[in-house]
Length: 514
Image (cartoon, rainbow, N blue to C red):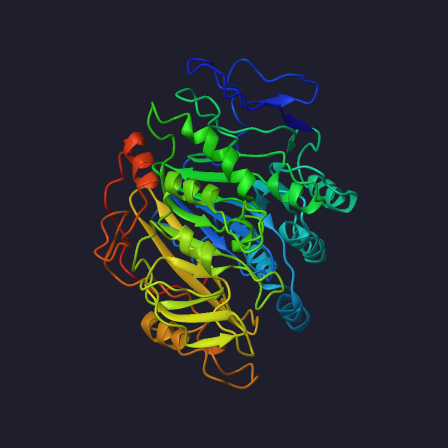
């Protein structure tokens, strides 16, 4: 087993060597020189797709890598696969698993592994990163391993990164079991032990935590110690906030990061102001802790909300698209509308056709249409043009849910969706459907309909592609939100960040889900 052992030291001189390094478990102190991150077998990456998988009240991301942009990801095996959290919870996902024998997120991974086998390749997950120990971020690993063994899939796992602290024995046991699929569990399982960041040395070397060829995995922050005493909050606070970078584009997957996590990350990024931002253009960000308010609110006063840490983090990162993964009408009330509003301050418009959004709490903003349906404080907003998405799309029965697919290449980006009607997984071999017709169906999905599994979207569950046209970057959308705070502008101006050039999205072509 290897351990990432480095301490964030804000007093380090900018000329000092990077403090983030992968060191043997016998190391007692941070390295004084940069070490190469572990590398996967894949080298060239020209397309990266993150599938934000519907997994009930959980978080699960499947990364697919392709060496050639001419490869059709709808039919061809991926050249590299990785998981960033893979957990689940909630009644809807359990019902889907009971009805169909396999939960949809596990079925998605199994399909990719079988596609590799069919091409004569070894079925392989090059990397599995678990942000922290909460079950809704790793529970699906057990089902995945059970299915792999039942189907006699000779799975190989390249490397495992285990983030966070206070891991319980049952959670650690699942990671130990997964490590048996690696070549050497002593060297292919890396765990974070101290507060650390790939960006810890302002103006210095940015060190990769892991390299999937041209796709770099970096740690924005990990293992932040919470001042709270509640064990659950301390575990969430220690989440690894991962950044996946391909050339000048990146996605951020923050696990269950809290306001304390983001505050520490902000402190790291603030040190870079004299040198310019170390961050690439952020194409997509997953909502921290499923869009929770309780763990993002720094105030301890009743009725008071302090989201200063989130505001600053969004000002530093400026995500173009936002995705919130949560269960249907979950007891945690995720995602909260106020969190979504904060996160989309710099988000673009029309990356994807108008679509439904489900949040908890009032959305008192002109940029969003009025809710078409309410249930207690839950809201369904149809016709949303801004680049913000939820894995739950309605509040009626049967539930309409979706995987959201975010693609980056060296010169483009795009967003697609893979919907489920009542968790039905029959989405792989279906007739092509005009994507705009399917969008119209989604917009009207809140109308009552029966439980017949042959009705609704089941016969039309092809992936919807975004419509033709340019993808607009931050600040170039004609409908860009106004009223950006002075602090955010000051931070951005001080960084003097050079924006990525306008990127044209490839022409729309309706795909079967891949």
